[in-house]
Image (cartoon, rainbow over all chains, first blue to last red; front, side, top):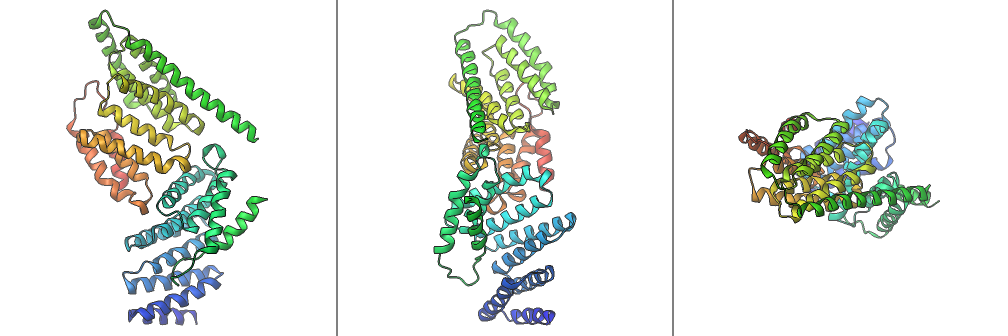
Amino acid sequence: MKKLIIILISLSSFSLSAQNYLTAMSDCLAQLEKAETIQEYTDLALAFERIGIAEKTKWHPYYYQAFCLLVKSFMLKDADSRDNIIDAAEGIIKKAGELGGDKGELSALQARAFQARLSVDPGTRAMQYGPKTTMLLAEARAQNPNNPRVLFLLGQNLLFTPAGFGGGKEKALPLIEQAVEKFNTAPVQDPLAPSWGREEATSLLANAKK
Amino acid sequence: MNLGIKQAIAGLVLLGTFGVCCAQHQFASTTSINTSKPGRQESREKAGLNDLLPQLDTARSTATYERLAGSFNKLSASNRKDWLPFYYEAYCHLRLALLTADKKQVDVYCDRASAILSALEQRGDNNTEIMCLQALELSARIRVNVMDRGVAYSTLSNEILEAVIEKDPENPRAWLLRGQNIFNMPDIFGGGKAPAKPYFEAAVACFEKQKNTNLKPRWGHQMANLMLEKCQ
């Protein structure tokens, strides 16, 4: 059944009409909301990739392909397979950037990739990827201070950075608060625009305040 | 716990200012001194640099850089007119700032380098090599606090390096450091391997042109080759 859906999607997207693109993406996004297993994320990554290949100039399919791969990377156990899949996701994020993707959104996704990298081996990688994530998100925030995902991830990263090195609760809390506020007030106009992070940010804020 | 950290930071700030005071004090007493036998002192000092520079070329460990910083400091005490021993001492402090595993030491080393560099600048010894070290100092300081310093300090460091490249396009270290800043920038904001590569190519080309540097700065050739390799 799933394979059939994917084939249908790939066929329909070859016709390249704007309406079909929107329908194919919306279908996949609806499935993404319900996805839970490694297999489902694998299938969805493939489906997004096919839309991307058919469309050629759209960045959203690649954004979501990378998103699915990164979620999958957190679910895998073997370190090498995790690194391989993160490699792939990073290449796709780059491609989305070349297609003119939103820099704030792609930074947030790349920050997720760094977090995934770090979590493969925190002992040896935290020193490298912690500051790298901060650098990326600080730059993203300097260019656009309104992206709630950038604010949330930056706050999350600072929560785990010692106070002496620019992190700590005092620095992190205002950022997470801002993120939650923007999640709650920012209007979602584009149906394909990324919208994840609201629940995570809200529960992180509640936990951090305790 | 919090108090402990705050005290530690206060201590570090004090240490940092202490370093600055020492270096400035040293300089205050130096500018007024006129060396009576320049010829002899100069030759003795050159012998010193001739001995130390090959050691600096191969230095890798913090212990070696610490030792060399001390040796250059002694050399500059014997001839305060020459900018080179001061320059090399500052360079050793910056290498230590980049190498140290203890991030709390980064600002301490950078403060020492900064005091020397700004004193050189004040007495008019402001050349493109010194500017390169000032840019390197800013980049090194980012290690301490990426959140508060990352964006601002990398911009400042780049501004200095752009100025050097404009003033002296043959300075290989300016190309190398500018390339490293780009290499370390997130891909999404124009950083990464591909945009950095031309800078390392320019650096390597400039290094190859400048075969005979004598006692003038020559560090960075190997690093430029290595960075270029990383970009392939």
